[in-house]
Image (cartoon, rainbow, N blue to C red; front, top):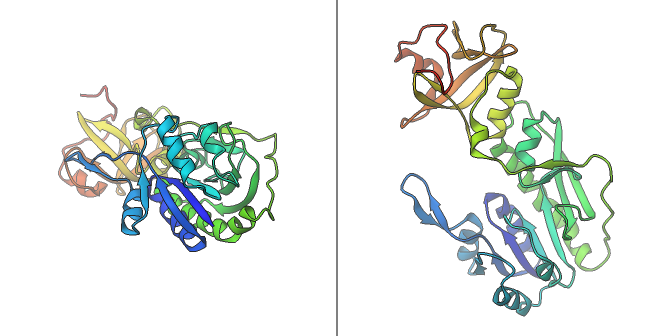
Length: 309
């Protein structure tokens, strides 16, 4: 089996391993290197790092519509392309290159959560279950017919990071189980249901700022959904605090006001309260909220939020 692989983040590593066990990966197509971390050092994406260790060719085009890029991809003469969180839509010129088409590993139970951020949006919405689908790609946004899917529960403390890891492994299992039959033409896809379509728009950095005019349960879900990116934060006495872990409480008060608490940094919301258990102050290391409070002079009633002094 001759495979062309499109993928970029850590999510793609388990599927890469699965494809390597099923056939020959002729090349890994991934996003360009970019600056990461505080030092902004130029770093290759995880998929490229994996390919380099395996001595597999890598391609990092800025776009997939360039004539030279399409020419190179055609020269591989692959049976199938596997796509796992590549980060760009594949144009028709690329979709038509593999003999058996392009198979996408999509981290949701389609047609729910089509789009760029299905994992985070499922947690944010409070879904009890999610999953992963093997989809035959077409020009529409995650509209292609499905070969197979697997269902997973979303646990009460699930973060986007932990769910990414589980769904990546589940996607790899689906490949091992079904990709040979797909390439051999023994497994045909079925159209997605027409009902239940929900879009999962790309995450925006501004979404991380907590609004205490909302119920506490919504903010608690958002903290888990947006970890590790864009992360959730608030402001306290002019200091930006990244919220790493929290739970809902029963406290009442003016939204944004700090409440007396023995558990952590408890903040009143429109409904109940948010108890921050772990946080990261600006330019400091993460620490327990109670430890942070021991070094501060903060009275109950002090308000959190950007507009506070």
